[in-house]
Length: 206
Image (cartoon, rainbow, N blue to C red; front, side, top):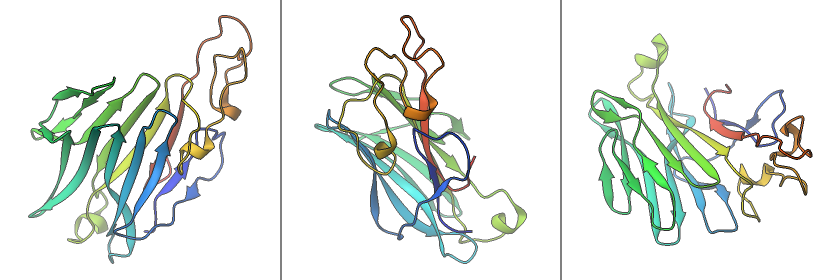
């Protein structure tokens, strides 16, 4: 039990990186040239309470604000998705002014267990994860956490920064592929298919 691990957009294999953080602190995962920002809030958890989990994410762009936060209610951890002040129920969606859609999905027992924020060039996915091993389930303080995935759908508006954003490499001139080391085989050829790249911050490397 320790800290979340991450891989960048330019990941080509091998061990993931450790994301050292402090419970209660907020960290920038992504920000770009169009003003989109994604931050994560770390919280304490694990069998002895010394692990760090992602307990909340916040997406900001202009006047838009989207939060997906795990809230401890009794023995349950409930994911609350709020878009510009409106809380989404499971399977509901909302359109963002300026472009983009937020979906509270999938669902379990009538509650959202994930959120998808889709922009014209980027998809942000956060999934609620729950303890599943016997030692984890029996620990009342273990808690749930969020795993976060960012997938490039089109070349990102530069400059791109943040823990995951810093790993983005813009496609070369004339190429439709993105993501540095994982560009498609036909990257520089006319008609080449765009190759989505995914960066991730999860509790367990996947």
